[in-house]
Length: 400
Image (tube, rainbow, N blue to C red; front, side, top):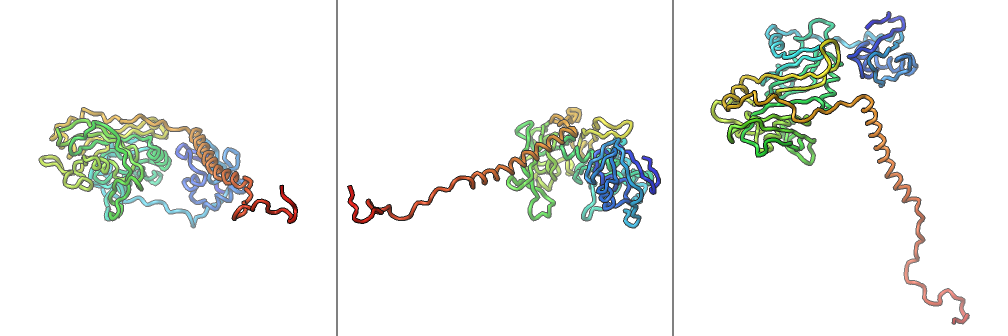
């Protein structure tokens, strides 16, 4: 991206990584020295042009559009400080690099080991997010970003976005459920049905500080999990594939415990019943085996489908062997069909239909109230007994 000196009118071409972002967000990302108030004033007075037309701060930009920016506007005192790159030890850098199973221009895919938190929190100082500085090579390299999470004791595929643009793209795909994730789990016992869908709303369990979830059909958020039994060791344990159709906290763990088959090693939701005797590990046996997601186009080797499989951690592989399960029996294919992503025009049409329906529903009560107020009012009948026969005639006049 080239630009003229700040004392002259500047022109920028919207890059692919900035496709779809708001105009004000573009300034925050590319010209952080220009404050929001200045951007708003420029837009209000028509000094900012996109392809020669006036633009508002909330307008979305598209790749290839030409942005005209007036001179000046720098606010050095308010310029945000550059994020500091955390100094990592050689051991930490090696640990981060050892987790990598795939790299593309838009993503770094890790195989997260069990016991390592995804993000920091109360009393959690070691986590994946803290190791991402290992992938920052110089000042021009943006710091990679998390776009989804795995529980601390869950292992497997964890997608990291390389740039802010790819982070936004991947986040939308996870939010729209177009990303397909398949987990492998060892569960206690053998489900009565070899496959099915667990549909049970989840909410935070009171008194646990939000650390534990439970089934709550009245107040919980909708949660669905599809499962399939791959193999079983009698009635002792089963190897299942799980595919979350929604993304609630601890969803897979709560759902399997709710149908009476907790994940092996998950004492939080299965209690003592979650542990098997013998040589089976007491660690939790839940692994994000495969992820299929559409990758944004950002250079050679990117775009299209990103399909990644993560190897099992040692304890999980050992337990599979003890129970006699052969990993070759499954390729972790998604149980549901791919949800086609909507085009920009389809999204606009859906938004129009939504607002049209909302306006229609809003007008209906008004029309009902108006119709009720327009009806002629019936005359009130006098209270008491009806008048006697002959009442109201002038006295002295004979009656027939």
